Amino acid sequence: MDIRELRSFTVAARLRSISRAAELLDIGQPTVSTHIKKLEQELGTQLFDRIRRPIRLTLAGEKLLDLAGPLVEGIDGLAVNTQQAQTEGPVTVAATANLMSHFLLGAVEAFRDENPRVHMRLRSRLRSEVIELVSQGEVDFGIVPGIDPDPALEFESLFPYERLLITPLNHPLLEESPLTSMDPVAEHPLIMMGPGTYTRSAVESEFRRKGLEFDVVMEADSLDLIKRYVGHGYGVSVIPRVVAEPGDEDTLGIVPLGHILPTDRAGLITLRGRALSTPAEALIEKVREAAADM
Image 1 (cartoon, helix red, strand yellow):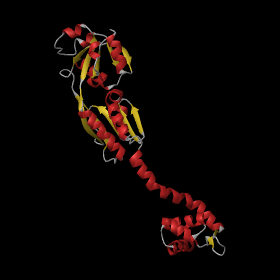
Image 2: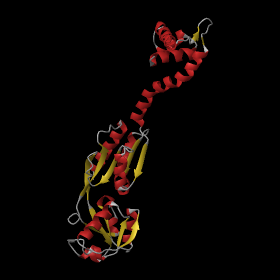
Image 3: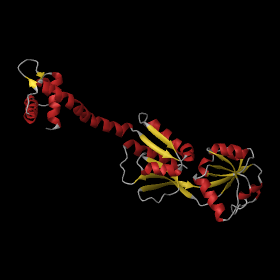
């Protein structure tokens, strides 16, 4: 019993005609008849009452149609569904919040303009959560700061991930030119993202390495919110350069920290050996183009 025999049977049963089934399947009528006879021999029962016209199913034939019909439809639709997945997605991407809003958005918009039928799912997560989603195969790819050493993942570098000190305008730290260490920064109230976020961890690691005491007076879940509060004089902060925007210098003091804090690389991570769909590969290409423009 194979799918060709079942297909011939189900089509003939629904059309109640061997000849019409052969025409629809674009095969010879003797072939359809042979397929049905093979099924009857294998099952040891007659599937059609051929005495009356149009032909009718026997009770055994009706039972087989109930069982085989959905199976044949599912297999016949498999190629269509697979091709649809290759052309329409979905494509699922995870990234840290700052990369999602200040880097990935441009790539997503460019991709959507060229692929309006592709369904995208975007996940904003902590860096560790992005890595976990990629590792578990729950997303097609992720975008994170910092190279991950996990051998199960592939990391493709996209652009330098530098940090900036931001202060209110006319802040005393702006007079220390050039800033040579994080020591004076630790003396001021800090506004930072929540514990465990990537840049905060880097800043706190440097403070602890130097044995410096520091005070985080405000925690926020948005770097744009942090910039607003810094601009209004509530403290200072360290942010990724990727979130700096034209016009920030009008409300903030900005000091590059590439010579003090390590400059990481932001990159694209995928699960090693995973085959990506055509839409996922196309979106990755847009991500590369966006990185090249930075």
